Length: 138
Image (cartoon, rainbow, N blue to C red; front, side):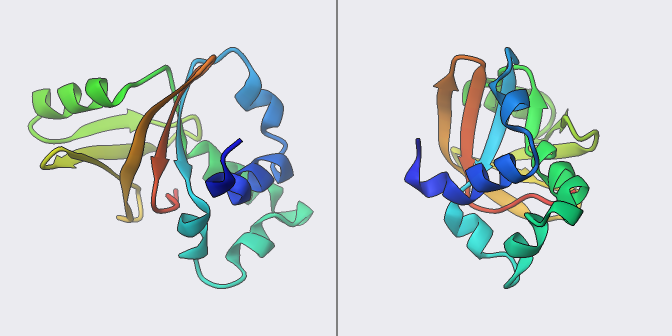
């Protein structure tokens, strides 16, 4: 229902992941905004949503999902307990690295792209969403 996530919703539909993400979960979703998708090179989103690129799109989207319901408070605590970094395995299979700068939470992908969590703890019936400002790439 977020006007800032229409690109993400379109991508989830194109990848056939609607049912999966509506299932019981729980899931923690790191949801890039439309502005985050707009930071990608021109034509990237249009290319990814084509049927022949469904596997690549699914790979990218499931890289934004971590099993379980992880709050910002949990992430902060785990980061502090682990010398400033916390690693979490995604549904896609690779890991994301979480860290903090002041009170802000960040996530870094395997390509060293960094996203800031701009809105944390958007609770859902099957998990939680954290809004991020950059698309993560496996």
